[in-house]
Length: 273
Image (tube, rainbow, N blue to C red; front, side, top):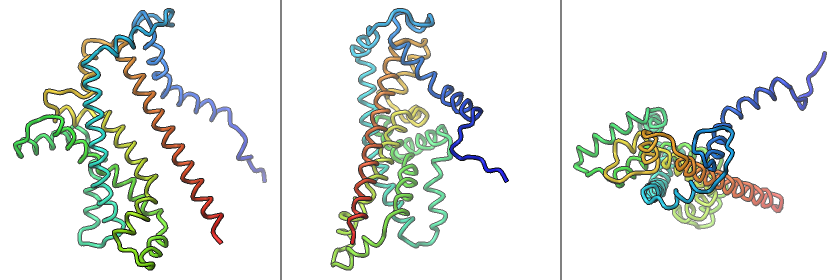
């Protein structure tokens, strides 16, 4: 009987992987290259590289106002979604109550609902409540729509949590509140960071919900969408390149924190008698 070496590379599989990654990342590479192209979006390959589009971008107050609005909304959405998502995850993992199965499905419902449905329903609620459309309604919309993301990530973290540490804390006289702050929450640090980064990214990228709830101000995705209606400009390529660089930096930071946390946990296990 002949066995296949699991470490042997398949040329067909390698070619397929190259095609998939090329399909995903080649457009991003083209976008980055054209952000330095003096001739704009025309003419390939680019012949004259310049930083003029970045200088023009940094002097564009409208874009930077929208960037600040997006950052404020995203940061506030992270705080709201993590707080409510943590409570929902704790309820799903620790509590027993009637209708728990239905509650689980309702919490996860925004993950499968189209953004246009979520945005329209939140708009109708804001009108019913007499709220004026502004960045506040956008923040409330993003925060509530992304609770499901936080709940999913934190519930998975709670499932992996070593309950023996919490039991030891309670046996040693710690109150449930002290145990939560000193044992449970620190052990969820990796899940909180991962959920926070994902929520921040999704909020910065959200268009459908923002479109229905925005007032006079603009967020960055809506500012870019409005300018794209007049045609693609290298200035948009430049801001997109900066966003991509920021996203990569956040992923690297999260990865380093994850590696450091896992290394610390392994070291603690090795030092146990």
